[in-house]
Length: 455
Image 1 (tube, rainbow, N blue to C red):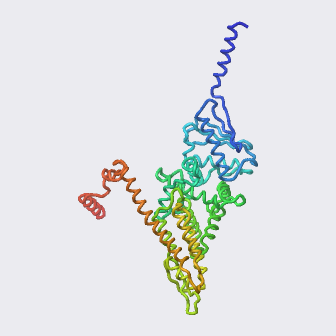
Image 2 (cartoon, helix red, strand yellow):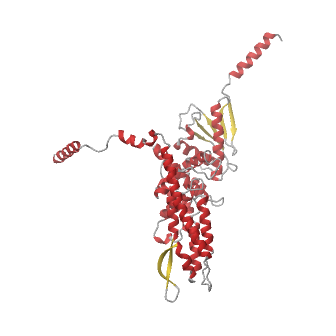
Image 3 (cartoon, rainbow, N blue to C red):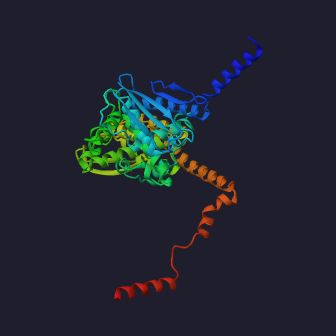
């Protein structure tokens, strides 16, 4: 074979290789989903890796896998499909999904992700009904995405380091939107400004339901599956799954509220608002001093029953300060042990959401309270009472010092801001057109309206 023939063969091989620059490649997720992409397309390769991560997190969220599923899901990246559009073909054993992936819109489009998550869920069910609705409830999708954003950001190293500005603002205001109404919203139709609060509140609801679910009673998965069935209404699916576990948790936490006339939705709302406190405040972002102090003083106001002439507790009550409790218990009241136990339980609820300095002092206070005698002594000693009052003074002094420290930090932070940032709100208001009419414009409007009504 001469050199010319060798050159021709090599050239032919190069031409053959060049003729297939877009040969397809594929990867498998841990749960068996096949993701196909163009072999030489780096952008699609990155999106394929992210889809594998998505599928793994999805299976972990719902505690589900496709091992018993009869259908295989194939995801094909196709850049000719318009962004936000999903093509779904369902066969007996092979399901195919196609969408554009290079621009990354599939990771941010709420409506698109609701469809994609619906297909993912159905593909993993052992018996996927032909009439099933391939669409995931919006609050689950928004909560899942917000959870993953946090886990890939500030929570990567410190799991409890949750950054939740919307929830913290609502906790400070003491007002929350209706969670039940939120579950019925179409997240894809919300304006951009409403997306952060919808995402954070959805994550709160999602993680609360996950906490209440178990492998034997997987309320989140049951709710998502029921929502795929056309004959089951949203209300029926909610009441049988998510609403049921929330109501049971509320009944355990607020046993007296059920007979107070609260509706089931009000009980669920109250439980979710209480869950928001432990979810939003933590040791890396503790409860503001104003709220921590108010919570402590609320527990420091101890309600005790008045004693009847025979020395037994009566129905009449009065409120005393925590500082008066040692002397009261030293009288040897018949309900002294119960009063001390109930007061300790109230103080123990203050640990969650506060920093270590607060909790050290609170621990010392509770220890001193538990050491207080509850029976009358022939030779009473003042040491337990003195220790308790010292711990109480230290606790209240801490709030005063912390308030001064927070104010100092706020002044320093404000002084470090550049002028444009410091007065941005005022400058925006200065150039904003006034919504009020001038006196002449208002008079003209009134005259025109009156003339129109006369005619």
